[in-house]
Length: 177
Image 1 (cartoon, rainbow, N blue to C red):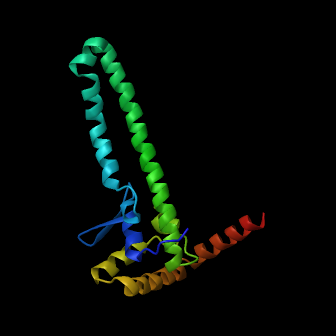
Image 2 (cartoon, rainbow, N blue to C red; image 1 turned 90 degrees about the vertical axis):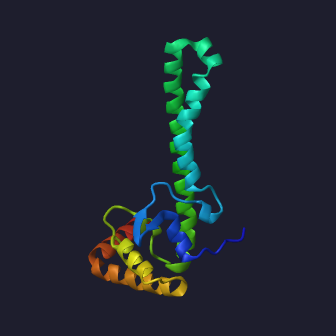
Image 3 (cartoon, helix red, strand yellow; image 1 turned 90 degrees about the horizontal axis):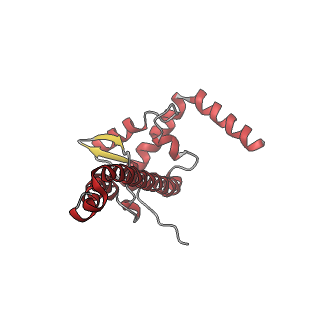
């Protein structure tokens, strides 16, 4: 299967959103950039499903057969089921986006774990969003964006050299088992 080459900005836009040169992490990643389901459809399903359930249960024909008590209980049960579907769709969507984005990320920054870039925890790349925001404010794209982010990654690794070395030793220890 032929692997598609995605632009660095496309990879980053799938997990981050920009508004007024401020970067925030997406709760539901956007798979539309990779030819999949847009995060807007998942959000729409999250908003519309309760109303669809209400219309299905409380319409005159169903309501007449169920009665008030059974209709309310049935509505709650179906609502829980529908929300589980939305959560599962979000989970699998995010997982697929991260998998695709990680493969594309490796073309630009081999050896830098993409999951650490988007992680909310303590990683050597905790300031990545700040550097990416500055690059966007400068209007960088393509090669210039890649060079700026490469320099920023090297800078962050130097600033957090103790953490990077500890992580490398831990990975070596895991691989040695």
